Length: 117
Length: 113
Image 1 (cartoon, rainbow over the protein chains, first blue to last red):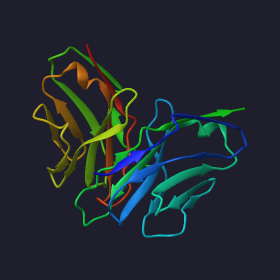
Image 2 (image 1 turned 180 degrees about the vertical axis):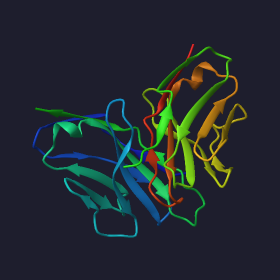
Image 3 (image 1 turned 30 degrees about the vertical axis):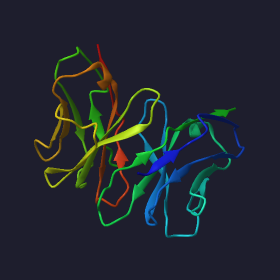
Image 4 (image 1 turned 60 degrees about the horizontal axis):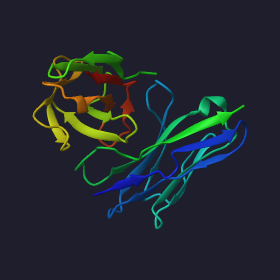
């Protein structure tokens, strides 16, 4: 069974600085998707970025980028030029991509990011 | 931008009572999901629903749980006889296709007394 591990329960960053959130996963599959979701306090989870496992190029969305290391099964999220609005719980998630067998997301335990002014 | 909406935002129920959590998925989406998050724990998959039937369910989704799409817009999760351990945040999600990203609602906080 696949598992997702986020080893940093909490992180803190100064406004305008860069922070990296860690995520590792375990799977025997070769074709899958990885996601980072952001959950502000009392708000819905929002998709931040996604990575397809067969793509070697790291995904980027504005100030958010990932460092995807397939062999090491690592999928970290880098937030550049951190803003106060980035403060949230961040979840790493995995989804298989095998022929529609399942679409469920498997989540890590989350990292609570605080942004200091 | 279209959103998934969930009601109520907070539900308090006596143990043993039935509860129905409601979700309105994004209108053109075809796949619907329920997840839950017990306080301090990870988000866990409960069930997925497509073409008016359950396509997958987890071991958590036992006979006490059921889902329904009673009309063209709502997607509901019913817990027949609630237990203390059902206290959690319940998230509804939808996706256009099964392989497309899932969009989540704000969640319903369910408190069982």
